[in-house]
Length: 256
Image 1 (cartoon, rainbow, N blue to C red):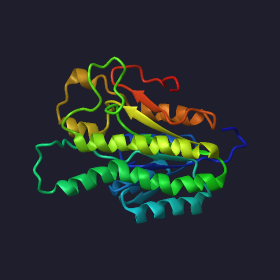
Image 2 (cartoon, helix red, strand yellow):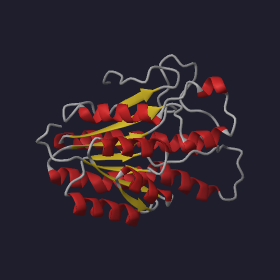
Image 3 (tube, rainbow, N blue to C red):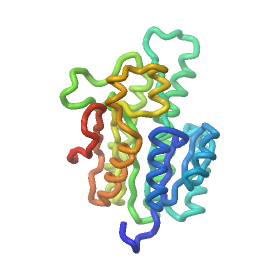
């Protein structure tokens, strides 16, 4: 952006804590209009603290998504950046009880994949009509893009629903990138490893291994990478899965 550019407007989902909050804080610090949403009512307090507009709701609810997008356009006239960050992690696997399995699927796919689908479908036409291009950034995981020299296969084990939902983001990312390229809208995945967030700490328990914890990335580092990605402009990379790994330098890799 230059001093003559219009103010950027971004929507960040799942921003009540963790990576989403870190991204929203970075964008507001950069002087952007920022709209945040989360099903946790805490999002309203967060929005007030960082100078954003907050909405409470479930990203898997099409009515909520439509309201947030329409309200953002009414308030700011355009949407330049969408970060699909909302999601949740849970240990699941083939030996889990059968009872409740359909609800478990709907919940984990709803937060990790359906929400990205709904927001992407709602925001893309706004970006097209605005004629300014834009960025859709889907927050994924290193489970679908392990570090090049890691001694493990794709996936993680005992997290089948989370992993499958994050793999689904690849389908949206790669298809949308190809479809939207002529409108100068870029679509990319951020596939990060362990990052110091409330969600990871909740999953790891109250006493994570100190040596492992020392390798975790910070939310500010992830926000720096996303800001760098957006700053590449309309000729920057698209349809990339950007791998960021705990214990490795948190730097932007070369385009794929």
